Length: 180
Length: 100
Image 1 (cartoon, each protein chain N blue to C red):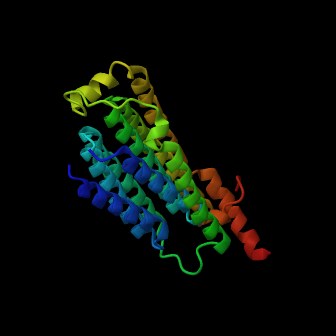
Image 2 (image 1 turned 120 degrees about the vertical axis):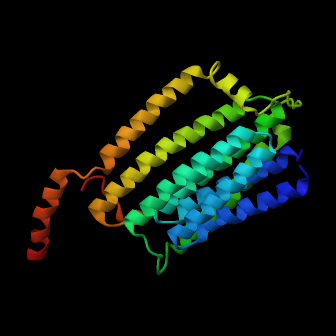
Image 3 (image 1 turned 180 degrees about the vertical axis):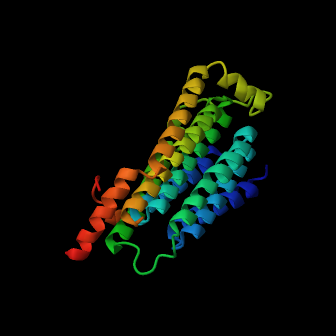
């Protein structure tokens, strides 16, 4: 993979990541996020992590983002008007982000990592090698993941369900507000 | 293959943008998207180092991170919907009480 592809994908990822934070319309933020996820997926594929790259496109840019889209529609979110936050917070946020980049750059610079880099073995990043690792070394974690997903499904249904008691409470509360 | 420094810098920058998003934005949904951004930056670092070490462990960890992110977003969006139903707002500064 020629280096300019990496440069191009990296620049695209950074610009669309900035778009997530800067856009005032939640839908535009979401579209920028999908752009970032797709470019990161392409970077995965360029780094010989083909299966994970496609999983990223299907699971992240597909399923999770559709969930976000439905929530935005459901809540009927509009473009934010007026100031979105405190100016001090904005300055602090961007300054903190810049400091964090510098710090991470010094910590994660390869000379400090103290690892020995080798060439990839044959079949690296294939579905077979991923599955081989997943169902031997990480079998317990894989099985526990199924329990986690079950708990998440039950939790999401329980949270998003309309609770009758809360509705009654709300109905009682409304006339009081008008009276006061 | 491109030097590791490039991939790690890219990962650090995307992570920092995610942090800035959580600090700056007050819309809960956009804060949530910024968290997804941070998760992706970490995934990128895992894949980059894994491919240079010639080990599959990094990709397996990325697989697990994606699963946990899916579970987390399902529960988190459920919380956002139920809090919106009670308060009619997604503005983080308006949600100051844990009870309703």
